[in-house]
Image 1 (cartoon, rainbow, N blue to C red):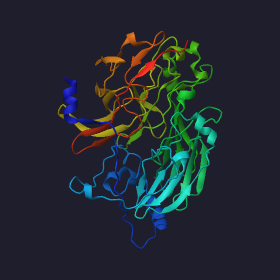
Image 2 (tube, helix red, strand yellow):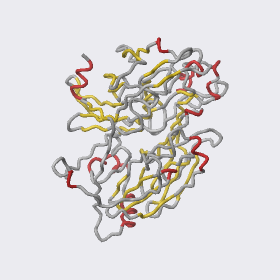
Image 3 (cartoon, rainbow, N blue to C red):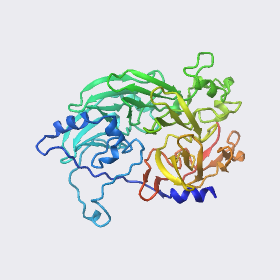
Image 4 (cartoon, rainbow, N blue to C red):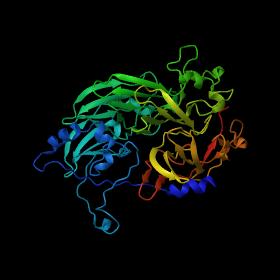
Length: 453
């Protein structure tokens, strides 16, 4: 019954692959050259403009198109009647044969995007001319720490600057006119195998950034940096550290009770890296962040005595001013399949059961599609969107997945669906508020698990 009620307002379509097109049209004076437009456009990107990003569909001001991360464009000149008439206007060579995962940012006719090795490009959207290129000179040895190639998912723009993260863990502010470095800060411990591939977000004058590396043994956290100075404003650790040391913030005392200290999880980090998803609700003043898998994968090894291992595989609602936790929801308690919740978090206002609800939608690796009250963190619905076998269903009282205990891989090889690649990975999903359709680039895959002897 719950399924039919929720899906009446939130029909969703599953795609084997997804290709997103973006029509770009600058609105600056025609006599201005591209370099001047680059500076003039980003100078006016402030909090108000980011809050109202959907009102200027000719631009694409942030990673998901808006703070709600809906990736919905109101541009309508290209439709089913004329799409077949499109042809190549120009192309731009990034000089790589490796993966390109960035979502381009478009401001007043200038494209800001990234390629491999965290290289940043500014391109004239009308002509394809390169305006500037910034190479942060990432050491090539860093590739050995990257689980999934030397990719980068894009930049953020704000107040005349372009913000980019590098694979080796730096956050850089670049001058939008020239690409020159204004400031650069190291955000990770270089002695640990951290990497960064995510696009930063700017919220209330601060640059929000997480990191990756749980596959190799790190401790996850999300940070906020002052956009003007690069000074660290706050940091929220997603998993507890060494219990012999003071907790960095009060929430970690709660989290520590869900880990077995006899396993010494802090030596390998514990995981929970926040490597992709961030959304913001200006009205509720809540910042939503998705966290990743436990490290190592095996729950038995990571926390022999059991426990949910907070806050791995969770959605966190944080106060954007302080970084303090408001609520959390864990999609995969005690994760042991690499079922991250770092996939997109999409915000929408929907009518459900006859009343308006502020919700977030989430399709993480574990194969459940969640609709969650974003004020309280309480799920409204959670249904599989691909074939799964690791869980037999969802407990509607606790909103915990019902794990199939027969598929424990400690002593034998078992087949698990979805695989660690996930029912949905980094590939962006989107929401059309006009139709109520959610588009998820879904994957159906299996994986064979067996714990090392």
